[in-house]
Image 1: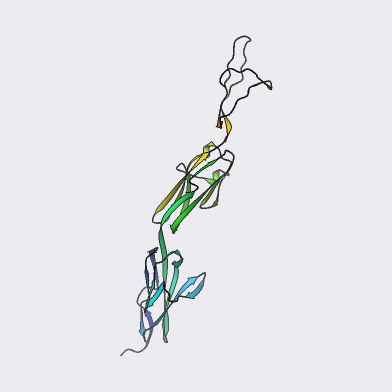
Image 2: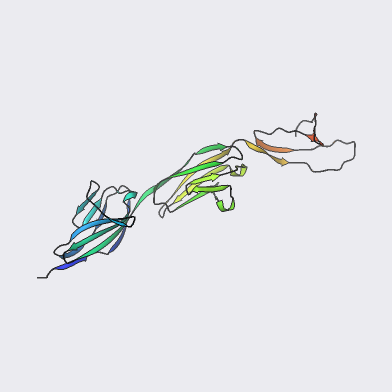
Length: 241
């Protein structure tokens, strides 16, 4: 008959598994020895090895540990110790937990006056999140090229000194290694500063014939027009601008 032996792992010493949020997970620590080894589990939390104890969520059956209804807080590094009086072996399991991504932007619709700032918050459910990208009318928002636009955090976009070019649809695109999620919100401009669309040029004319000058501008509310001659208001103006 064989004599006493230290525990020997019957599996790889490092294992990585991925589980969907809400599922039950089984971690194994297969080892043989004589006498049969005892099994204990530990979890690495902030660099500290913390014993894992049985609970309504965690149960043990010999070399097996079950975690019920896993969520993001259960992800991490678990270490099993298989030991008897002749030695010890350790097996690591790296558990990652995934959850379907879902994103939304608040507010979904906002109206902001010209020159003011708008803030958009992208709320994400699910994990892991590998990247976040903001788009304006389908074009990536480049904060490095426009100091009016900044990220307070990856999920919080601020657009300052609003102008006409800033209105439209904004998208928050969230990616993981398996899927993407996108949320959309609309930014509308309220009151805007008048902006000249058409002005007249300097002209040299002979006395006598009439002259027509045109001045066109847009704004919200629609701008009113005042004509001046050498700094003095003109009291009579033909119809139009």
